[in-house]
Length: 70
Length: 235
Image (cartoon, rainbow over all chains, first blue to last red):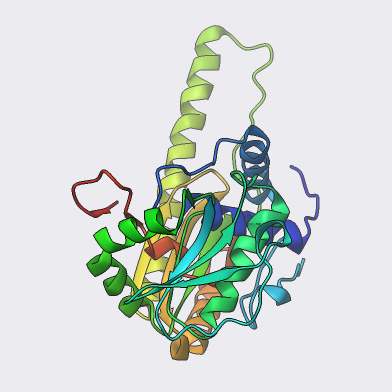
């Protein structure tokens, strides 16, 4: 079991990527989401969230107060 | 070429703001909405800085207006091309802007704190015994997934009661048993968080909720206005 501690920045970035790249209204057929590096980063970060056992993000006051509590 | 961040209602008051590649964000005003745009010479790469700028521009707009956040990466040849799309989706744009007024999105993920699989030793056993062990592990895995999906549905039912709208997926991976988003009236955020923390205290050992927000309502702007569609498609 990987018990590495991950930073709040990484967790916030996962949530950001999930929304900005995969959600939101679509107006144009010319969406550019096919840059391989970004896709790989996204997959990597999702894996990170799936494996973290220490992270906890609190929404009190918004994302600026994201904190680890392990 | 123009890059579009979001559509907003006419209440928008936006101070000078830097967008992608440190370029200024312009406000295009149409009769029933505005569009936040930046002039670009090519399609902007979705690197971390640009993604954060996209989000930052939308969050600034949310301070004064109802906002429809757009997915990253949408460009138009010029203002005329954008106006044509907006015109074709006028009623849907207005409907969404009304539904998002004074609302925020909150995300919740349900996490398992440890890998709960049972990696029994399979060295030195027969092929039949190996297959039986694999079957046993698979059955146990499905039971765990079902159990955690039920937990996720239970969490969601209690949270959605406070929300105006919601989206949920359960049983996503072995370690993420739920992912959900809630559209909440701004005045109800404390009530929502109190409910969330009450739920957390009752969760089974080894599980945890991760809450993020407030976000622009990305998860609820799930409408496709692409030109060429014969209708506005709600996916």
